Amino acid sequence: MTLVIAIDGPSGSGKSSVAKAVARDLHLAYLDTGAMYRAATWWCLHQGIDLTRTDDPEVASAVTAAVLALPLVMGVDPAAPAVHVDGIDVGADIRTDRISAAVSAVATNLDVRAELRRLQRAAIDAEREGGSFSGGAGIVAEGRDITTVVAPDADARVLLTASEEARLARRATELHGDAGAAAVEATRDLVVRRDADDSTVSTFHVAADGVVTVDSSDLDLDQTVEAVLTVIADAT
Ligand code: C5P
Image (tube, rainbow, N blue to C red):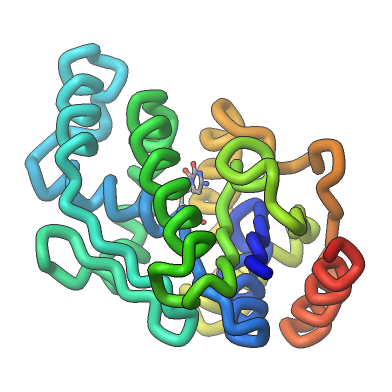
């Protein structure tokens, strides 16, 4: 039996760590769709496109054209999910503030979303059909619109939430090594503003019909993974 698991959530909800752990546990492939939007952003900047000016229709067209020609290779091994653009390993670069600050400008372009969804569905179908990494076991895909748009027919659909306080503390620890007041403040703009910008195109703060919410505010990683595995077991 092939399993398709969809996990959505805002930044700092822990969805990447949880989705990877679930995929490893169940021997499934792993697709980080946020990394695809980040790779598209990296590519646009690499082409010299000014992403502060995407309100200009000419700039928006340049973004669309660049993403339609995006030479992206997504690794789907949850133990080492490498991301290559035009043969360059961009795995580390796409996590930088430079990309985090610009990604919403690319992700709110509807032509970009259509193209990346097409690639995401193709990656999911490849795992369903047995030809790829998992040998037909299936895939865990995570992002903002997986439960609702990319894979509304997934076998289990989870919305991973956490309080703003918990999400800021996690990102601050990730980026600055601690969750003290200064580190949290330095993180606030990147997390809160990006979620607000992203909300214009996908509603990932409220679970759609049939999507199970897991609130990780008071759970550690292992407990959150357990909770998600329970949702999957209940659904399948
Ligand atoms: O999950 P992550 O923080 O890496 O996502 C980066 C960005 O990609 C988000 O801020 C959002 O703009 C975009 N994204 C999206 N739809 C998805 C996944 C990510 O719009 N399914």
